[in-house]
Length: 92
Image (cartoon, rainbow, N blue to C red; front, side):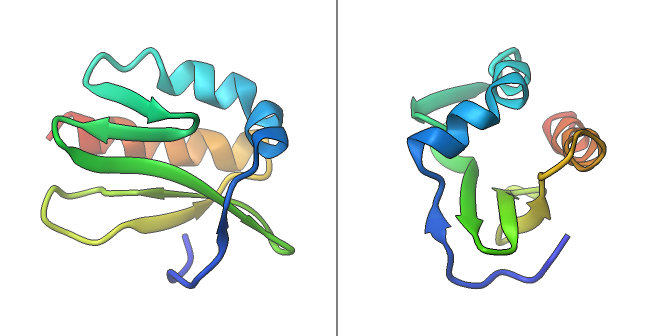
């Protein structure tokens, strides 16, 4: 996890590189993908991706009324950790 700073939204090519991760996220019935890589839970933004020279990041709202928490998702290990946080948030 890292603190939030301004970075650009993930490009189509970055999202393509995250295809296995995105396919996994798309299996969560509570989430709706409103645009590529941008997921909502009910009517609230829940998860989206960013990129910058430091890597690829996912911002997820772990608690309904809190700000987003940023996770680096450059490796399968980091993605696994990230998904465990997503699953915990969805079970609340």
